[in-house]
Length: 203
Image (cartoon, rainbow, N blue to C red; front, side):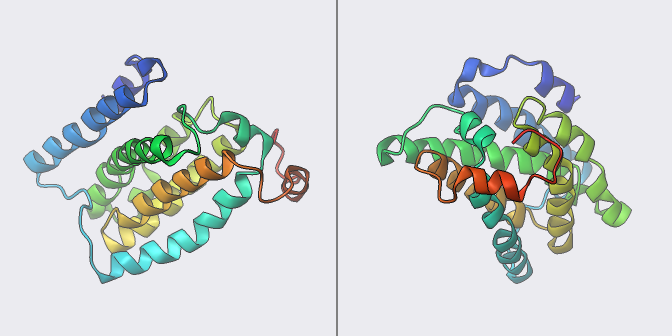
């Protein structure tokens, strides 16, 4: 029901403010109520193991965002909502976008993974198809990588029973991606396209 509602509700007309409201309602409030009423845990916890997993996942994912920021299709698509490199514009944009990320991670990695701990690590394979479906319309390379990324994030979060790793990796990574896209590429785009030429999608 939540997935169908997210897909068919108005796309918010490009407004990040309205996207925050929609995603917070569907991905945080509703799963939160269901978790409370059904005795499920969504992964809102921080401990030493969660911090360790966060550092490991971030160290793995952040370089991917850096390399990806030079791809032509990524630079055309991002930032998803209008902003600029001026801090007065970029910082509020990043905070709102981080809330959208928190909402997504609460649903995909919390409600559909950590919240299903009783079935074991198989819970990390519950949402990849839905997650990939919700990436349709984004750059092809992102669509291809969305399902594997969903599984990776799910396994890491499940391992420490916390959303912290995926929230930080996804949220900080997206913030960094936007910042890099708003500036001259760190790596020549043609070089990155050549590195990834073995992947059969448009770069």
